[in-house]
Image 1 (spheres, rainbow, N blue to C red):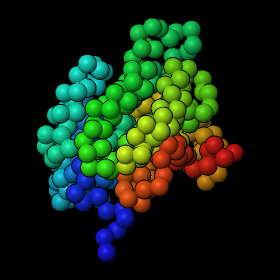
Image 2: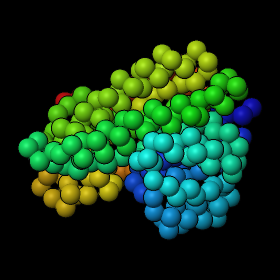
Image 3: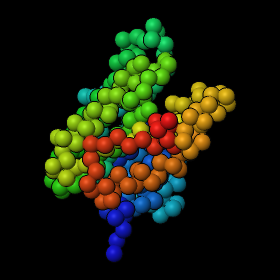
Image 4: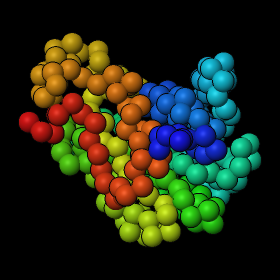
Length: 253
């Protein structure tokens, strides 16, 4: 009997796959059998990760594009489907966080944050939905944040975008889940990524954050493997519209 976590025969698209959370999720999906299209801006990093997947017997292809131009998202969807066929699973991991004090937020930085973090996940997913509907099965996995429900210093625009992701995920589920497309979000705690690099240069802050968790440590990227595979597979068939915190119990304290 095949495992309900088996992703063989599925095709996944992961945005923000050049590094950090998106890269780790692409690796996890490939290990579970999915053919994975890794989308990001840094081609060298994408090619390196694709090579790692192929060396382990997996299927992967790089797609180096800038998602910030929403007018091109229809073409992005076509290109993503060209290598392995129509996309079954999309993970919206691309994002930006300028970490600006409230008085320094500009119209430009606000628009860039809300565009990439909130608008792109919706409009890209919508381009991919028709093929999922034709098969009666699909998965949309968004990346939320602790800031989907909590406020942090220098995070007003980012927090607004991630609060929006939580509601977007619920609205996506309402719109599409009756057609077999489950839509959920992962809200990570503190993990070592490009966006959190400033925090990881401050040992005292890292220790404080670790003590805020129930488990007593900050996240490691491998901690995201299980939830990623779960939400991408048949194991989560009756779960949709949810924001699942993977934060070591940070929000429980």
